[in-house]
Length: 331
Image (cartoon, rainbow, N blue to C red; front, side, top):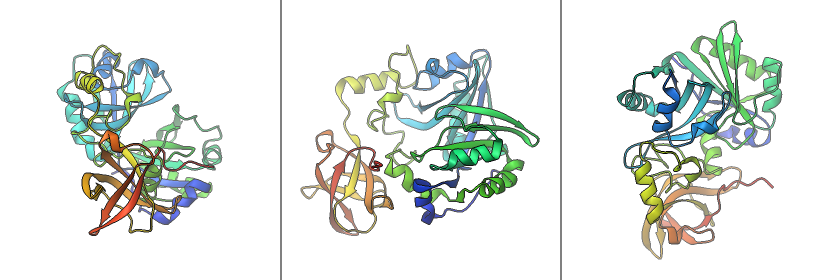
């Protein structure tokens, strides 16, 4: 089974100031290849794969016909007709089933999630760790390299979900213990999913199943940059085009607590003038900012930076303000 390590929230600051290792084994690896794989993925995914050259990666979405998000994922282009889809673990089975249900002749779908593990190294010192591990420069953001090692193939990618410099490694399960030990020996500090969650929230990166769902579109989440409406067709395109023309009913908004309060969590009511206008989709105490932060879908007219709102926590309303994205902005 894929390697797993515990979550250590206290190591959050190690990533903003130095270097941390995260357990990202909770991902899935689905390989797509075949003579028709490029054209088919262009119809299955929202971003424009023609702008993703071999050796590069691209953030994109798998949508239902209503334009709702089945999953957000990263596609790595290994060749002209050879791709790796890195998907969320909770969505592996659903994504695989959706892809197979829409498969065409000339496309091979190979889910290797159970056979592969992943580790991420994030933080300013991460390039030095990569150099110690592999004797070469780390891949730049949005690119990846394939390394042939005695234990098998390692895909090393300049990607991550923390807003910091870093790289991710995808490899056969048997290689996990040795790679983990070597990464720690190279100077990285073990961290976990709890730290990574606060880091991505500070950057306002959405979490599928919380901030993204089949009932919400990427346009509502403010992620239109990853939607290629100029492509001839993809699943969900018509719904997105109609929503863009009419205007989104809500916007995924960044919130910052402006008074001392308990940490906000998901599903807390957001109020304006005592009236509920939405609920938080994610929330946490931000170690970097020293205050509570959250994301919530709000009406567009109340989603502008500087707008005063409140978050209800344990029956009490606390002062909150709509802020710009990302919430964490290095000085």
